[in-house]
Length: 250
Length: 230
Image (cartoon, chains in turn purple, orange):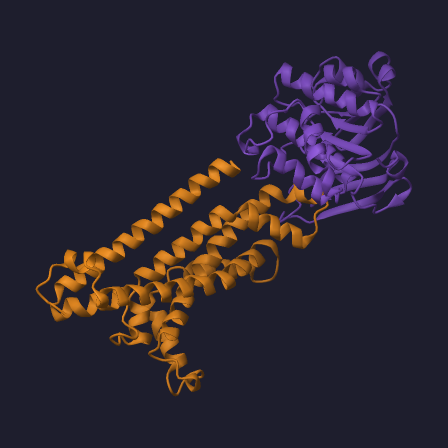
């Protein structure tokens, strides 16, 4: 596995995304460093998805064919360099697409795309399916799996790239507690292997369980960025206090 | 040819005239579908995956051409291939090749338009993942065609159905010459007006049988695709 220093730290430098008159991200200055998971929280539409996708190197959602042209301000660097291709990064999208292949076929596709040695493919597929608790599902058509199973398969597929950084966009949204636990266990396991997790969530409980540091986004701006203990016990901003108190941040 | 034989006897006894006609029909329509696939699938993929000025107009045109009346396709190819036409020097008019060309003109828009739709739908579903997996352009196209293969084969069968069933184009450019350019549909048209109903009905039964088989095949492939790919 490649050392995380190739990708980290990820620095946002006055980074902004606008779609026509709508500001999605505005003046983001943020450094994501190696270590425990960085968890991004904030209300719907606060820019979590766009932030993760930008850090991954993907266009903002709906940028393809979108009517208003997107304008990007500032820049993002990975390990001090700009425009680093997404070779050692992977992302679990909010709604991952299942390739029209078997579960094993989905992982094999990712292994091939990442040019992993072919003679190791079968071993890696078995390892990854076991890691996410899908042993025995190898030959099942991916699109016939349940929501929770698809999410775990997408996670295994992302990990097939041996990423140094793994972005997870609300990986447990709409999953039941058992499926959520399965995903969180994998997140803990890959963090222990030195893979940097950057994830968004709606679930403050999940943020408490997993986060090393917390980024609170609101209306496209970073309101607060602090290590998890500080954020939960002595938040610095009124927005963070309101968010933690369960008030509606609008 | 015995005119009092029943249509069924003709079909079941393997009447050589009838089966020569069936053979030519299949040869012409299968060749047309093969050529149309080689043009239509890449064209569909190109329109699905690229953005250019006039793209919307191209899509509308292709969709409209799906309903191109066969006689109009026949007329166009007739004008192109006739002695004084731009391709007249090749002497192709009233040959099976001319019929293939006319059917290619009919079937290519169907294959291109439906492939475009299939590949674009897949692309919308896949594009973020393929970008995240850092997949290059050629592999993207290969992935979309492979993962859409069951739909694409069904599209080819739809194209074949259209080609095998049409009469307007091939009767104009083929001329319905006995033993040379006479196909099932042109023979049915001719024999019906001549009053040789047994041959017309026999050919009609074979033609319907082929269409049923093609549709059964399309159905089977679709089901297999659902089972394998989900």
